Amino acid sequence: MMHALVQHLGVMRTVLHRIFSSQLGGFFNILVIGIALSLPAGMYLLLQNAQGLVEQLSGTPQISLFLSLDAKADDADKLRRLLAQHPAVSRVEFVSRADALEQLKHSTGLADVIGGLQQNPLPDAFIVYPKPVGAQALETLRNELAKMPRVDQAQLDSAWAYKLEAILKFGRVVALILAGMLSLALVAITFNTIRLQILTQSSEIEVSKLIGATNSFIRRPFLYFGATQGLLGGIMAWIIITFSLLLLNLQLKALAELYASHFVLHPLSWGDSLSLLLFSMYLGWLGAWLSVSRHLSQIEPR
Amino acid sequence: MIKFNQVNKRYPGGYQALKNVSFNIAEGEMVFLTGHSGAGKSTLLKLIAAIERPNSGIVLVNNQNVGVLKERALPYLRRNLGIIFQDHKLLFDRNVFDNVLLPLQICGFDHRESAKRVRAALDKVGLLKREKSNPIALSGGEQQRLCIARAIVNRPSILLADEPTGNLDAAYAQEIMAIFKSFHQVGATLLISTHDTSVLQDTRVRTIDLKNGELQAAPAPGDQSKS
Image (tube, rainbow over all chains, first blue to last red; front, side, top):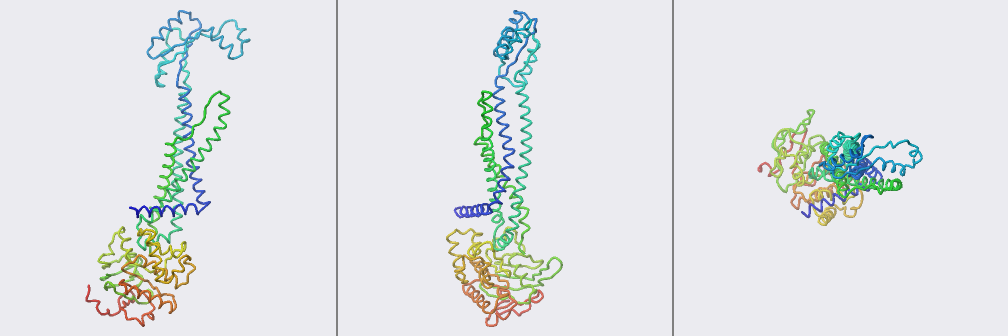
């Protein structure tokens, strides 16, 4: 047991020496892997942040009901009672047409223009806060409310949020495809690196086979190399993502202040970081394994 | 220890390297394998290490039929053999010490024990002072001795040497032969191939003579009785 451990540590030392003694070559490999991984992982991170934003904004969906202009006060009263009894509605707020006009005057600075109007063009309105349900149920509720008496128009205020979510879903698929392709690229990079290593070390491999090395002994340093290179590439990707995020957040802070918001991009969580590292390590190992399986049998002592 | 029974080896392309070769080498014996180049000496040694497989006949090493040995079992056969290659097969990306260390790394010896054994092997061949050198800086004779050190560091019971004195001058060759004799004295089984019969003149050892892949010499005393 101790024996085996010492042997594995020895292999690891050789591998690290190989990576760091090749200096630029090894560094560039790691950089390429890091960039390849940081693209889909960074995209995933941005999507996740956008997702958080959408959830924040669409957390309390509202349905605005605009009554027809000829609706009377008791029509509104009737509707209010109807809405209050509806099982899917948690709260109702009434905005009279006079209030609405007043609000418009204050918030837009169009007081002069509005003052010149012959009559109030705005309808009475209800703001309906539904009980928390899914997007589909909200749409059904909106349709139902639109058919109520005297209701001219029902508008689901969070509709845009659902549209954004659909876009995010699309983005996630794009990220997934990107991740798949770049993972293949990573495997290919490792495959090739290991192939070159095997070629340059063919004499060592041949001699080792001649003096009694098992296949797993010969394979081991290459597999370790692939996994280590993958891991370092993953760390590189993590650094790229985290650093980019810092830069983006600097800009975003100024932007968010204009909107009086505290929105910041959240970095990769511990779990996601770990997944990224393990995944890149696995891909490196896989590339090495494929390469070793393919090329090692070609070096047979003669 | 090593037994050939009607062994034939034909290379792809039809070249018949060994024809119906049978012999027996007992444990602790030292045997010279002679013949002109192309006579099949290297092929015979390769069959023992299972680097090549016979087309017919049986090759027994330590009572194992190596001709049909599974790929997975080969490493353990070879760990029991010390092989001195005609072309040395030294690794020039590491120093003398690490070259000799390789077989021990393969077998998984721990660091301290390995270092001890490597130095002992280097001492035996007189290269202890060169352990930090790169093999490329060694003379032909020194490279040959380094190759011997690597072959013996694992203390194998069988030593195979392919033309160990091939391109060395007489003084060096005698030195190498003296090293081999010292292994013989401690009980190792040795099979040494050479085309240069001059090194045999002052030694009274058994020889197996090959000519065009066929066994020539009359067997030495005490050979055919064992099987």
